[in-house]
Image 1: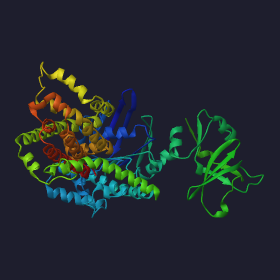
Image 2: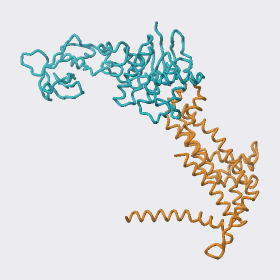
Image 3: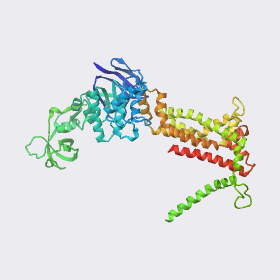
Image 4: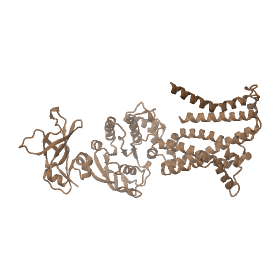
Length: 334
Length: 256
C-alpha cells in the first residue's frame, strides 16, 4: 500500500508557474529524492507537501487521508531545513522538545522522548548548549532530532547537507540514511547534488522546469537517462549531436547519442592495425580514484574516465590513443 | 610618534571642547555664589535640595516620564508587530517603511508644529494643549529608531524558516512570534527604547509650541525657570543630564 499519494499538483506565483502536473506515489519506508537544479521547483514542492504553501491544484493524500487543505501542524510531517532553522534563543533540549511542548504532553514524557532522539542522533551531553555553540553538523543533527521527536509519518529534508563541508556532509548523509532505515520512515529528500541522490535514494525523481522528467531507481536513472537534460545532470555524459555521432560512430540520430565517460575504453599504445577510433589526449584531470581524459577525435571532444591505477598508466597530454566504444550501451536521447 | 601626538592633541581638544560646558555647569550647580572671582565662593548641595523639593519641577519631570513611557508603550505595541508583518508577509514594504520613518528627520519640528497647530487646534480633534498631541509627535520622532532596530534584528535572522519550523511543530503564527521571534528582537528593542526615551526627555520644540505650560514637561520647565537662578537651572540641567546618561549607558550595554 502506498503511504503518500500526490496527483496533479500545480503551483504558480503570479505569472510564474513553479511546478505543474506533479503526480507520484511513495511506498511506506521509502526514501525518495527530488533531484534537480536550483529553481526547478523542488523546494517549493516540498513546502507544499509540508503545508507551508498552498497548492493551486491537485491532491495530496497520506494513508488515504486527503491532507491538501490540512494545516502544516496536523499533517504528521517533520521537516529539516537547509538553514537548520533552530531556535537561537533555546537550548538543544528546548529546541528538540518544542514540538512535544506544543502538543502539551506531560513533562516526563517530553523528557523521555527527547532523550531517546538525542541518543539516536548522538548528541548526548549537548542538551544545555545553544545552537550558536554547535558546529554545522551538530546543528543539523539537532534539527533532525527536532523533526523526529514528534514521530512524523513522513520526513521532509530540504537540502539538509548543502551548508556543510564535504567531510561532515558524507558522514551525516550516511547517518541520515541509517536512521531513516532503522525507523522505517518514509522520507523525501530534496537535493541538487546527483551524487547524494544516487547514494541515498531508493528512488530518484529528477525535476526540471517544474516537472518530474524521470523517475526510477538510482541505477536506472543513471544508466538510462530519459532525456538530454537528465543525461547532462546525472553524470558527465558525452552528448553527441547528429553530425558528431555520424562522424565518430557512423550513427545517424535526430537527437543526441549519450555515452558514459567510464564506458569508453582507451588503448594507449595503439598499433596501425588495431581496431578503434584514433584520438589525441588534450587534457588530463585527476579526480582522486579516477582520471578524466579529454580526448579529441574527428573534431569531437570526449570525456573518458579511467581508474587511477599505477603511475605508468598515466597518459600524457598529446598522446595518441585509440577509443573503443561499446555500441550496445549507447543511448539515444532527445 | 609625531602622528600620535597630533592625534592625541586633536582628541584631547575635542574632549575639552565638549566636556568644558558640562564641567562648568556641574561646578556652577554646586557653587554658592560665582560672580567676579575665578573660583566659586563656596560649594553647596542646596540648589539640588531646592530643585528636588520643587513641586513644579517634580510635576514636570513626572509629566515627561508619562509622555515618554506612554509614547514608547504605544510605539512598541505598534512598531514591533508592524515590522514583523512587513518582514514576514510584505518584504517589499520595508523600503516604504524606511522612507516613512525618515520623514520626521526631513521636516523640522518648527515647521511641522505649525501645521499641527492648524490641524489640531479645533475641529473634530482639538488636541493642542493636551499631552495626547505630544504622544503623537513623539511617536513620529522615535519611529525611525524603533523601526530600524526591529528591521535590523529581523533582517539578521532567517525569519521564514524559523516561522515555518515552528508552524510544522504545531505553533500558530502568534505563538511562533512570541516564543521564537520576539525573544530574538528583545535586545535590540530594549536598546532602541532606552535611546528613544532619552531623546524624548530632551524634546522641546513640539512641547513648547503645541502644549506649553498647559502640560509642562521637563524641557519646557527648564526653559521657563531659566530666569530664576543660574545655579538652580544648572542643577536642573545636571539632573536631566545624569538621567539621560544612565539611559544611554543602559542602551549601549543592552545593544552589545
